[in-house]
Length: 359
Image 1 (tube, one colour):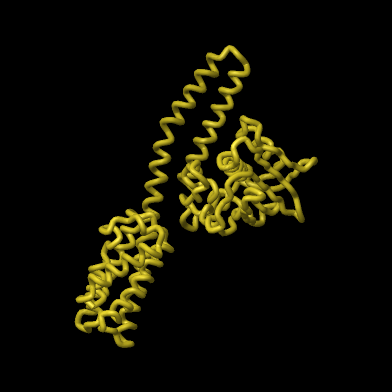
Image 2 (spheres, rainbow, N blue to C red):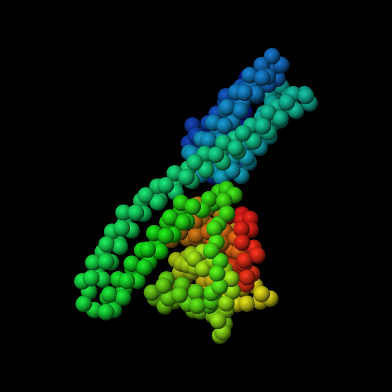
């Protein structure tokens, strides 16, 4: 096996570049990573006196491989697992091609070693990504403070110096928005643990959801593009006002950002069988079917055209809010009908407070 190492590694790299899209642009030094050493270490598993040492070394190499993939490549954990599964296939195929096939016992030993390696690499990948997320949160929180503080001071000066009531009201709107951004930064980026089992803290009270929708549309839509479809009567229920407001703002903001320029965005609230549906619709480029789940994963936005931007926290937060209320969020998107996000939650969320969330 050691004699075939270079052929195995080269064949594996060729296979990965052709079958794994995210590997195509990687430099050979990054793609090859620890694979040559892994081949040598797997060979040692076949020598009984070296097995214990080889198992320990293989764990270290697999951990290094997973950590480097998390730091240096655009991989997700599924891609990591896929490339290592391809490695197992290529290794056995190259051994056959070199006329040095492994017997059943040897194949079982190597296969078990690679399976353990996949597990250790995936664990390391997840741990490094978690650390990077924490660094990201700390960096974003720090970087937001200076421009936010400058915006608030400027708005305060405008409010004091303005001689026109309309200008003064606009300055007050900026101040209120800046305060909300500050609150969102602290609560969303400092307290919500998206990647783990952390639960979203809800402060449930009774309020009119239709009125909240009007507030959201009025605060976010300077160009009057949001069309409201609301019940004629107030729609009272028990929910967390702050988190639902932020979820609605995220959905409406995304609809305006990614929708066809100048086209209206629809925000609808309906009640069916003691469940409310909050639907946000826009026309424009559809979300590819393969991205309809990944857009709800933290920091992983679907690239909806060249205007895609942001941190990728809005939709995961909206999902967390829906699920914490005992409901869900779904998306339907196609070129003919546009894109619609729907939050579906019980009218009374008190019994479901603290429900497990995926986001």
